[in-house]
Amino acid sequence: MNQLPDATPVLGLFETHLTVYDLQRSIRFYREVVGLPLALEVPERRAAFLWIGHGRRSMLGLWEIGSSPVGLHLHLAFEAGLDDVLAAPQRLRAHGVTPLSFEEEETSEPRVLGWMPAASVYFHDPDGHLLEYLALLEGEPRPGVGVVPFSEWTSGAPARYG
Image (cartoon, rainbow, N blue to C red; front, side, top):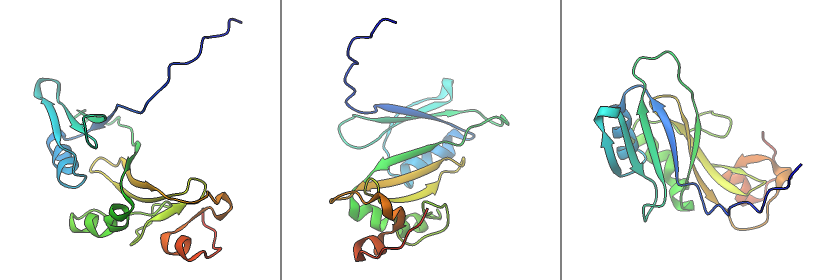
């Protein structure tokens, strides 16, 4: 077996794509709820592209599949600041979107994934894709804690979830 040369260093993920049932509804959701600016809409291809973050370094493509019975429900995590992740449940509710925990139950606060550690809030887009706001936390990972509410993580409580 021939050994391959060193891999090309990856600097980040530039783009990802989702299939959607109604392109205009999804554009509105990602602009108004998630806050992504529209980069380009291509009506003849039933597609749109939205910038993620600053500096045009990442994008999300949306592709309309109409009433097709075949569709995937995927997961995307958006990096956000900790203050924004903490405020996300209230902001999502203001848009009529249910904030979810790691266990996909309604929540009023982020969950912390102890192995990273990171604070996260999940929610669904209109097509059922599971979206996440995630903020990496300072400090050492504590994988033995599992997944706990943010309030328990910050209090140091030993509760274990997930």
